[in-house]
Length: 296
Image 1 (cartoon, rainbow, N blue to C red):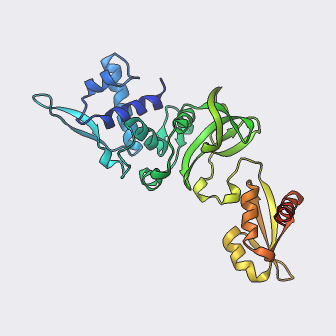
Image 2: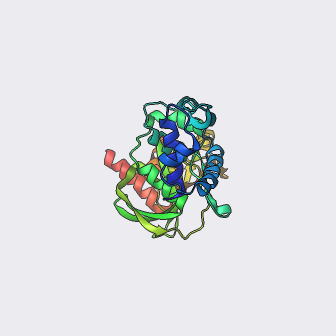
């Protein structure tokens, strides 16, 4: 059993209990711990530190079933930053761990960013469809295992780096072995089951937060640099939309945009009506022409 699985089991057990669990009760109830008491104590002490580092509100309170009372451990659902109690303990544990920093054994690369803090989860939790896929990918990222799945009707073999929640969706960032490049996937668009594909080999790298990306930057295609020419009277709006505008001698302005999602890019350009024109590359210009002709 991996460390993440054990932390999930521990968090779910503490959430499910109405009274504080003693260390001995945790050793008996939570799978993943060694039978030897000394080994359990060492592992449990490390796990308590990891949970607190991740922001889990772990409390030490007396267990009333002992005389004299014995200190026990408890996680109060009400302290989970407003997360609704209709989630089952294991689901709530997975959501929290998916949205925090998971500390792994090893060197610096043992820190894998899996998302925002508890307040971020609380803000969006009503929109989350929790079906186990997220937990599977969190486990793969934390244990440095590759996964395979189908996406956009193509086979993908990915080494997960980060699972995060943004703009109402879960996203997976990682290294795509078949494309030899980093990629970003919307998890709800994964087709079918996720399978294990062995140990990860590519170093974990930093990735963009999906929450900071614009629609045309959210995709798994190779990035294409698009040049859009905008009339002078729309320059301010172009700067607000695309954020990268240069003036031409004739008074027009040009924007250079990194595009991974063609449909979203087309929609952005159409907001300018006839005050904007795609200059390059030819395939994006052709896509716009074909789309407009189809509307006639």
